[in-house]
Image (cartoon, rainbow, N blue to C red; front, side, top):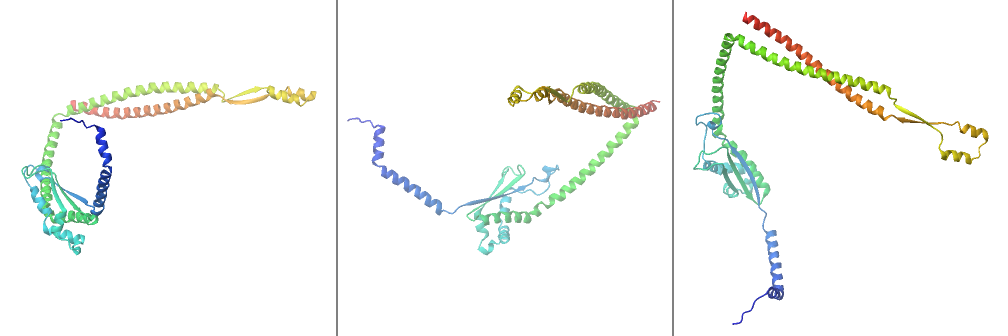
Length: 333
């Protein structure tokens, strides 16, 4: 037997010989895909979801109270025939011949976050309903009407939750009120038994606050003195600097030659030599000093306000401290 090795050129040669078959097959596949795409009706999906809150004992209580249903129960409630009939009437689709069975075929109900084995499982639960069909507008109307109808028809299942929450909160409020009264009585007794300790602690706190404010005032006064000295220095330097420089010069050489070209007489020539030109130039040093002075004055004003605030605060703390010290002295006496 003779062995023959097939090369890439052989494949290419075969494809070239059958090129019309390949081209026709490709065109037929594209045409078929376009026909299917244009003739198949579009499918839409509209999704709505409801949040199922946890049982009451998982929210605020310690005992099992409130209505608890399994995930399958929520699915059955979502697909109940009377609920779907009311949904169809609310959307007006009953005139178009819609039936609960037709709506059920359009619906897909899912419950997330739990399973029947784990029941009651983890809360909250998400009851998600997906409507699938070719009429987008009807799907939206069905989803909205179904959500409203489901909440209205099943509200009684969760009515006891509000009443139980109110009872629990009322009971908790009474308990907390009693504990608060006890704490207040203990505080009164402590103040009666240990008044000196309490007042001494207040005096110590005022001393610490007074020392902090006094240190801040000293720092602010130092900065204020430095800022005031800087303002005075800048004002003195600014007073010595003119705002403009006046420069005097004779006419330029070009002007002189032009004047001589007009052949002036002796009198006019004598007058020309006495001509003086003056230029006014802004003093850059003066501008810089004015800018620095404005910044220094702003800083000086800010430090003045800080010093006034610290002095006022120290006076207030001093009065309060004197009153506390007098009270402490009275208690000790």
